[in-house]
Length: 272
Length: 325
Image (cartoon, rainbow over all chains, first blue to last red; front, side):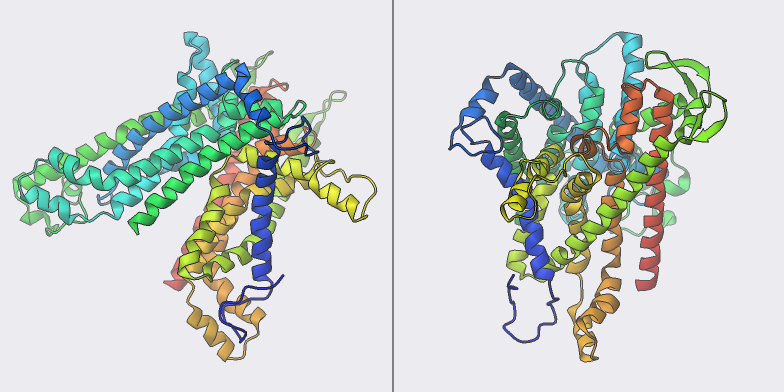
C-alpha cells in the first residue's frame, strides 16, 4: 500500500511507517460491511448471498409488512416525543448549570445528568424492567409512557452536551448590552440568548432523536408485548431466516442517521 | 438552599467585583434569586432522571436482597441468596459450597474479550487517529467526519453488517475458499472470535475520537527535536508521541472497555446464545432463569466493575495533568 506523501520524497517528521496503510485498512473495514449491507437491500432475489440484479422489491415488501409499519410508526413517535421533551429539559438544565460558580450539589447534578452515559445500558434496562413491573402491577397501566419516559431520560445527556457547549462558548457582552438597554430578563432571553443558542438546541435534539431511534437494549426490556420499535423488531427477526427485507429496513434507518449527523456536522462547521 | 456566603458568589463570568461588601442589597437579592432560578431550571430534568435512571438503580439494589418469586419477580422477604449465587453454588447432593463455574467462565470471558477488544482498537485506532491528525486542515474534518458517521449509526445494524461478512456464506469465507486457503467455510460466527471482531468493529470510533483529540494538539516541534537528537522513529513514537497522547489513549481505552464489558446486543447476535457475556447472563435471570435478585446482584457487580474502571481513569487523568501542567 503506497503511503500518501505529504511533503515530497524526503524525510518527513510526521510520517510513521505503516500508519497510513493501517488507517486505510481501518476506513475500508469500517465502511465495507455497511456498504455491502446497503447493496444487498437492492438485490432482486430472496438470497442474502447471491446477487440477482437490481430491484426495489424488498423496500416494497418491507413497506407493505404490517408489523414493519407499526414498528416504524412507534419508533418515530417515541423518538419524536422523547427527543423533544429531552431537549426542553436539557436546555433548561443547561441554562441552570452553566455560567454559575460552584454551587451546592453540583457534583450530584452532573453525575445524574451524565449517568446514562456511564452506566452500562443493560444495567439501566434491567433496573427499569424491575421498577416498571412494580408500577405496572400496582396501577395496571401498560401504555407507552414507560417507553417514552425511559427514552427521554437516556436522551437528556445527549441533548445537554451540545447545548451546554454552545452556552459556554457564548459571548456574554450582548446579553449585558441588552440588560443595559432596559430589556427585561425574559426579553433578553428571547431576543438574544435563544437565537444564539438555537444551533446547539437543534444539534442536541437531532442527536437525541438518533439515539432514541437506534436504541435496542432499553427498549427490549421496557416494552410491553406488541410494542415493537424497528430495532427490536429487527433483533427478533435476526433469530429467524434473514431476508433482504431486513437489509432494506437497515438501509432506511441508516439513511436517517447519516442525514441527521451530516446536518449536525454542517451546523457545527458554520459556527467555526 | 443558599447560605449568605454562597449567594454572593453565585455568578462567575461577571464584570462586577465579587466582594460581598460592595454589593447593594438589590444586587444581593437578585443573585439569590439567580441561584433559586438555577435550581428551578435544573429540577425538571433531574426529576425525570431520578424516575427513569438513578432511582431504578436504587430499587434494583433493594431487589438484590429479596427472595426470588417462583415465576419471576420477587417475594418481599429479605435474603442474601442473590448475592450468594453470583460466584457460589450449593451442591445438590451433599450441600457443600462450590464456586459457580458457569458464572466465573462468563465473567472471565467478558473481561478477556473486552481487554482484547481494547487492545485491537488501540492497534487499529492509534495509526488512524495519527493519520487524521497529520492531514491538512482542509481534509482533516472530512476524515474525522467519516469516523463520526459509523459512531452515530445503529449498533444493531453494524453488528448485523459484520455478521453478514463473517457468515459461513459470507464474503470472508468466499474469499478464503476462492484463493484455496480452505476447502469448506471456517465457522467464525457464533464463536468468541466473532464477538471480539464485532465489538472491535462497533467500538473502534470510540477509540479513534479521543485519541485524535489528543493528537490534534501534538506539538511536532518536539518530534522534530527528537529526530534532531538522532532518535529512531520507534524511539520518537515511544518516548515523545506516546507520553504526549497518553490522556487520549487512556480515555479511548476506557470508552471501549466499558461498553464492551456491558455489551448485550453484539454477543447476543454474534455469540449465538452459547457464548454468553455478562449482559446476556443478566438477561437470562430475567427471562428463563427467573431469578430477579440474582440478576440484580449481577447487574450491580457489573456496575461496580465499571465504576472501578472509571475511578482508575480519573486517577490516571489527574496524574497526567499534574505532571504536565
